[in-house]
Length: 187
Image (cartoon, rainbow, N blue to C red):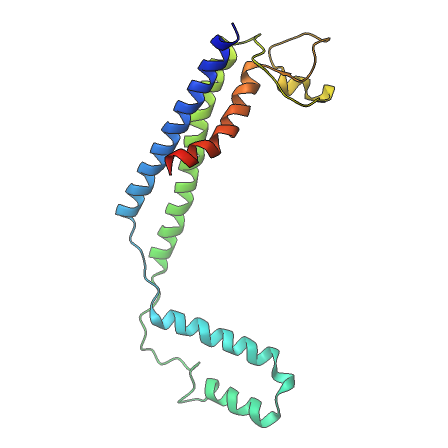
């Protein structure tokens, strides 16, 4: 009788793991095709390096003599030849494209969350309704009475040991336990 509960729960969990893997793989492939990757331009990289150099100059200004500090500041801030003076040679940053990329990234995260919920809730409801009252497993360690409502949902026996697990709780244990095994086999 135990195998008629144990094996279907493990089978459903493995199939759901495969479905999640292939949906995630499909989403990655479609994102790679449709996303326009903005390349970091050399000017932006150089600007970042100059800002880091300015930060270091400010942080270590007390270690420099006044002449050394003024010469370094002059390199960066001279009116005509200083690097920090705006020369207008660079194209403006496309803020609309950056905002669209951020929005699509947030939507992709929401799609992933909905996929996890959509593939977790229906099997959990099926297992909870089909295997209610069955105790397919026992955890190998003792639990306190506070865990009773979590591990024995659908079973109302006060004298039953808390370490026995109901079908829905067993589904969660298997789902989180098989996650790493699925990544080993599918990667």
